[in-house]
Amino acid sequence: MIRAREEQGFVLVTAIVLLTVILGLGLGLLLFTDNQQAASTREQTSEAAFNLAEASLNAQILQLSREWPGKPSEGGSPVQPTSCTPGTSTSTNFCPDPAGLEKAYPNTGGASCPAGTQGDAWGSPLTNKWTTYVREQSNGSPYFNSTSERTANNFDEGPLVEGKPKPYKKVWVRAVGVVNCHTSVVVSLVAEQLVHANFPESALSANWFETGNNGSKVILNRKGKGSQSGKFSIRCESPHPAECEKYRPGQIVPPLNKEEEEPSSTPSTTLSTEQLEKLRAQAKSEGHFYSGASCPGNKELEKLSGQVTYVESCELKFTGGAANSPPAKPGFLILANGSIELDGGAQFYGVIYNANLQKSSEALVTIKGGAKVVGAIVVDGGGGISLGDKGNETVAFEYDPTAINEFEIFTGAAGTRNGFRILPAGQ
Image 1 (cartoon, rainbow, N blue to C red):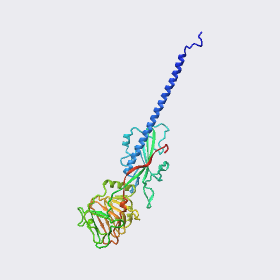
Image 2: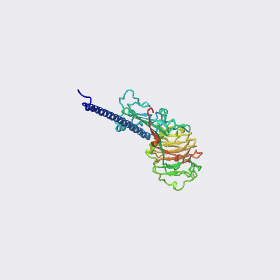
Image 3: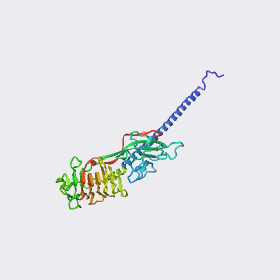
Image 4: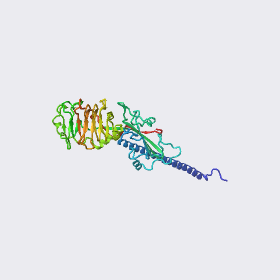
């Protein structure tokens, strides 16, 4: 008979218990490791999606630096597209470069995501590796409102200035990045960057100028509204008429001093090609660009109102009307080429700058009859200025440096301080 107090088989029981405990610990450790690996994968995917979203956001801001959003004055869609994807981006539509993003973030996106997986809240499918949206800051708030901003994209319908809608100076850029069916959405408030441009504060600057009246009545008032008399910068470089400064005593007040009657060393090119391109884009975005078939007609001088207005390939002639009137806000008119003639009762308030890209030595700015310019006139190259004629009954030119002092050039776009944020799901 085997007695109960005997311990035969106890070691086996103990071994089974220990083996069970060790097996449980091993399975738990394996499960823990698997969960950690899955969490690490999710974190890595989330980080990759965020990096892609941020990269596409910055790429879109770079495109905004090329040209600020707005509606061209010649019609058509807004300059900036309202949304961009790898499939819609081109080299000319101001979308991010898909090749650059593909090289930095290859094999992203979800070609076949699990059933029921939702896309971006604004409708971008998960098959898009990235999507960017540009929206105007419609309510002026520094806080992003997904509901209202989603449909706010009429860039040319900003607050009214002198009865006309002016584009917003800030826009929202929203970017979506997708990696392995995981999305990340970021947004930034982006501001237009304008800097004051150096521009000569001369009353007149050209290769030559003349008055067409043989009397002694005042044709040109170079004191005008300036704190000091506006200077003359007449270069007198070949070719030019027989007289580089042709006028009669009494026609210019205050009279020119001896230094101003000598040829000037002022450069014959006032603004660089790069600056002109920036101003051209700036005028287009604000609806103040004219070329070819869109050139303003005889009675449409008011179309040249604005800071900045850019005109190319136009021979402008006006016998009436007024630009930048009332004169409290003088404008800045840039003629890339062509010429302008004011006659009758036409009035222009601000700066007329002719870049003379056609390299003409003719009179490129002409003021006669009862017409008048209050501001400054600058003509590059060999071109000249003709003021007044025998029919002049009023002062043809009056100096006012206001528009020069307020002259700004678009230099790019940048995210505003505290304007960047990561959006939660559904926004």
